[in-house]
Length: 328
Ligand code: BTN
Image (cartoon, rainbow, N blue to C red; front, top):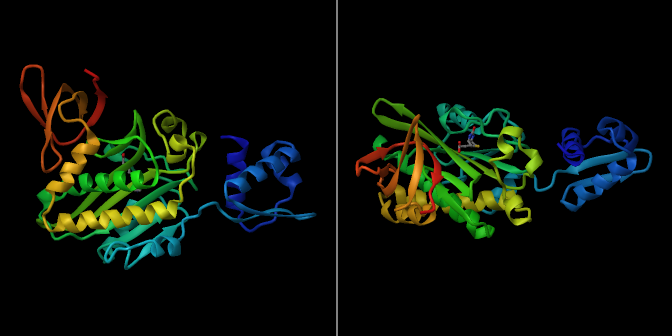
């Protein structure tokens, strides 16, 4: 971690407290001049830091902090985020938090967002690296009156809403990687984790968890993620207002969710196929431990990937990791 990142996190942890330049230089193990230089850079990035002689520095406001009023004032929805938008400084996992709320009866469209996750969950039991101040870690509680076999469509739909809302705000050459990763070349910009609670043979609730790397710098990610993650700022060189992106995504998501609830899924799938740009391509997939290679024939209505291998045999893949998209 760079000194600037360490200083930023230290100030954020002690928001509102006066910290002298001397004290900070000892804590960070750098000169007082270096502290001053980093304070100036942080101010340029939008952090509000006061400085007073004989008192030192005091962080008043984190740059582009997630803010309930800003998110809700950007909403044009009538369901999503209308009852409750819970914003947390930190939680283990917003999916876990949302599940707890859902089990206590939280209504359809409730949103949980955190500035940081200490145990963010990824697909296939992986960890989702969730550094503070730069990401969006968001979970939605949905109670759609659909049959369980239609549930996988929710994840495909979320990938489309997310990709399109990102594209509307930032010129990023992103694409969807089956089943639901948002990628820029071979680096991951955003991911989706959908979890479903069943009651007998019906869906009780669905938690759709979305992680977006927005303003995180390379050094903010842990070592495991550094080589595979990217962020909006890393791709464009510009910070993006996280509150604005949250509202834009929720607005787009609701439009698609209402179509989905009316069983009008075909246009959404069409948009998914355009953004995925994988039909007809040769790929290598790790399908839950089995490596398969072949051409993508189609993605069916439930997001199942139909792969034709070199022998002409068709394989229906429900989940997996696309390891390689072959150029020819
Ligand atoms: C993936 O592996 O691509 C899915 C990542 C999903 C991460 C998000 S962040 C918000 C929500 N809470 C979690 O613990 N995970 C999801």
